Image (cartoon, rainbow, N blue to C red; front, side):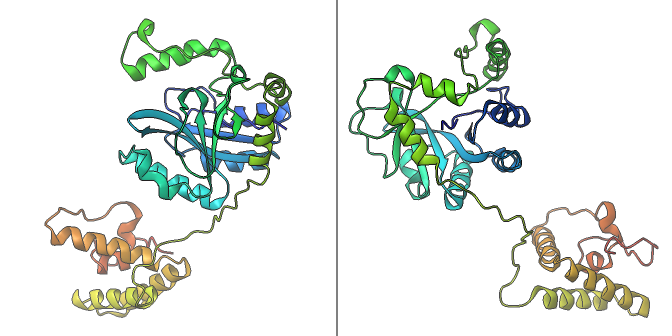
Length: 329
């Protein structure tokens, strides 16, 4: 069964009109079983797409188009995560891209558990790209020989050819040129049915076979549990937070019972919410900023109602004295 890999969503800014809901609904209607997404230089839609596809009985295939320089040539590589490790590596790669790194050789450590697809028009004999490399071919490549296995590579940017005018307008805006000067989106970058795509690639059966083998075992398991970073691995956060809060209470000479009772209650709730490390991290950021002479405000929103935040100098307002409702309750 054909699997569509190279789809750009609206998260490929100014280069697609494909929204996730319509894409998944249309693919389900057409009979797809596995469905991919490869936005340009980012993974902003990846998790939402994967969840949406799974809820609709489709197996998600998470990828990304990365424009990298290989021996001086800029090539739009397609990268497909084969499992959770591959997805993590894609996220690392996307972070490097956002930081301006574009050299292919700099990403060799991130290609584990990732299938790299090189568009046929960018292939040259003798290219050394890695262990799991495919050439992404079009139907017109039938009969051509490559030194890597081939897979179908059909790009989807819209649902109707009439949408090409919208994309050309988006290109004009992004390129800051007149509409007539903007790059024109190719025809037929549509989501065709699996049967139509299999027919289109009937003269390259090995591409269809390679694609089926490539995607057959791809699965992802997302851990959605909230995980906050540890502030100090040498001391439990609950103990360190209480120590700092108690010290702050004493340094501010807030000795009446009402303060101690409120502090104990807030600390108990913070611990129940597993927010001890969070408070310590915020405290440390503000402490560092003030030590460097940065201006820090007195707090905003409901945080001003927290006594723990006040005694840690995260905020500058005494919530008990000013009769403020506790934000930790």
